[in-house]
Length: 471
Image (cartoon, rainbow, N blue to C red; front, side, top):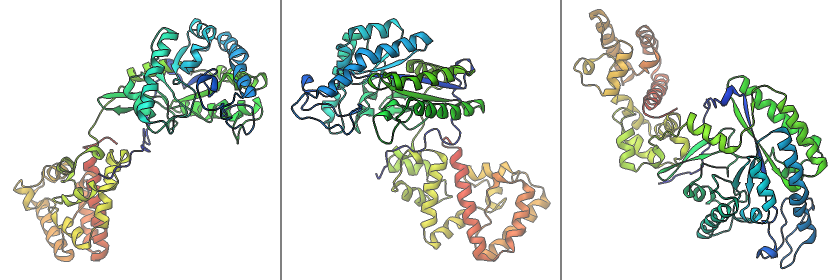
């Protein structure tokens, strides 16, 4: 099968109502990454020093050497930045989710105790704060297991959430298999969503790399705390307005002890928190709170996914969507299908592509396979189940004798002129509208009518799929 794994459909044009507690218009998730002591260092058995997310411009790894300046910047996050942020959040009574690197937590007993005393959620941020992109799958699986073990040993309970950050293409799947209430290694939505991990439904709470103080250490990025405040305020305002309009969303704010913990940077965060707290209907949850709410309010609902079906099952299920023309489904199965085609709209497009690219003779054969409206097959009850229901929806199964004669005359005249039956998406029309279209299209030239009939075939298929698949 030619399958495309990325899901660029998500919740689609009409996302679900988040229904946040208390009717909140926005959920603001404050995340503090605790990485200090878990970064690359030859002290930690790594081949080189850390070079990522610090105030050292253009930092590079130092193979085989300790980088004293880099270490001391990370140390600032643990020694000063964390405590400044702890005072800020506890003083405002705002709950926080910690993304805690297991080895960093093991080197920070006082900070862990303070997190727990504040009632913060301590999620896992992996075993070490290192790059995973080239890590073999089995090694990453081993490190996930070791991170869970060490986290449980240090914190006293197993982590219920996970975010790796510097992840591999395998990370989401491996962490879903490991069993967490939520995982966050995606940046693809403003609301949580479910993915299927084998027999398990995994909740994903997307994270952010832009409403994130890491931009103080990357280019283009923030230079002043005021810039950080302005960006957070603008993001908040847009999402809050959407919530006022009935489409409540989630806003993540990503923070790091060694970055936002610096006084000049933290001033911007403080301004944002004061600004957000000044609005009604703002919920500041931990990510575990979001997970519990979403699981209760929007539990996972599985459905058959066309992109995962074998050919026989696919054709058996969708071979009748184009009237008596299973070849359309057979060819569609061979296309590059993916999550985008697991909805009615998506699969309708895939089938239509096959129909449109078919030869004129093949398309004409599809037109010829359609029954006359209110014709002999209908009277003999020999229509397909789909056609029977469609014709009944416009009352074509209950015609008067005069109406039946008129349909018969129009059918005969239309077929004689154009060479195929009159086709219209009955469910879009009333009996009167169908008759009016019949008369109008009877007089069209056959080339124009062929194009219109093909468009109606596609519309009928799309409506049938809406009865079979979500969206």
